[in-house]
Amino acid sequence: MDSFANPFAPILSEIQALRKDIANLNARIPDEKPIRRYSVQELAEQTPLSEQTILAAIKDGRINAERFGRKYLITAEEFNRVCVEVKSLKYMRK
Image 1 (tube, rainbow, N blue to C red):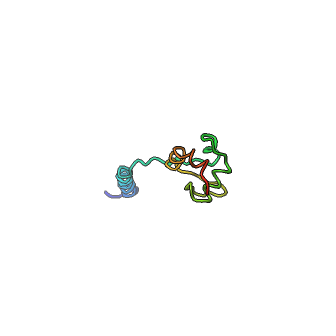
Image 2 (cartoon, one colour):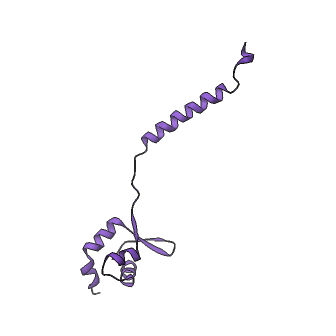
Image 3 (cartoon, rainbow, N blue to C red):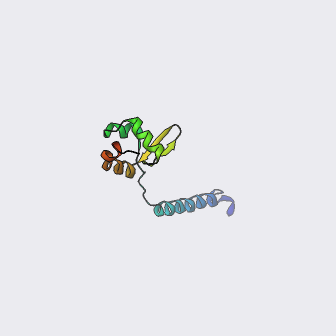
């Protein structure tokens, strides 16, 4: 009486097994927050530094930034550090 058995039954059971595996994998993945990055323009708007001063500090290594295409992006941690040190950064002499 196998002639009336559903020919797709093995495929459906495999799909259900895969769905369970995917659910288990998703449960293991931690919820990571994306790292906030600021542009040179955003940093210049929120501090008394000009964009040229910030770019010079990036090129000198006083501000750590990642290059993304033609732009520099500054992480939130570095942004906060720069905001704390902004006065000394603006008037720092070489």
